[in-house]
Length: 158
Image 1 (cartoon, rainbow, N blue to C red):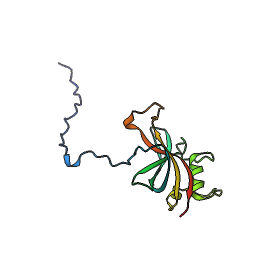
Image 2 (image 1 turned 90 degrees about the vertical axis):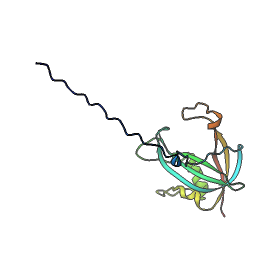
Image 3 (image 1 turned 90 degrees about the horizontal axis):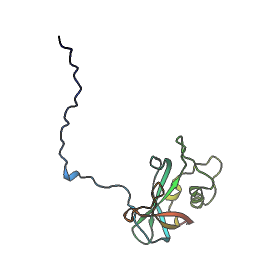
Image 4 (image 1 turned 180 degrees about the horizontal axis):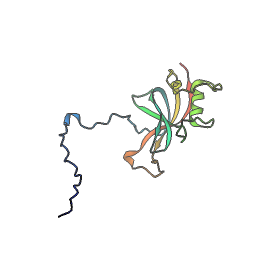
């Protein structure tokens, strides 16, 4: 008598699904232009976040600003720490300083520091520079370089 053969679970072949070329992969995320480094006048357009960014292991917020001189947008990125439980705003953080300028004053204890303050119609003078390093601090190839707002210098109410 021969021992019973155990059957192995062999995966079934997957069905081949044809790719509809009309529904090709298309980038629909934000555009990150390259501008000459310097100061620009901008106006707040939209907010993304705050959200947890796994590649940087931290909370991040992106505020998109439109240039007043041409139809191009540039983003400011703000870090809210690496505590998984919630984002945090430090008194010396870039976000706190920018928020105080946009709000025209410091927050009161317990006041919500919503990023909507950047979308209230005021204009901002900002400093723009190239982002040419990746998450690990290594230089980026030229094609991956983009411009970002590194500092909000002042706010002008309309």
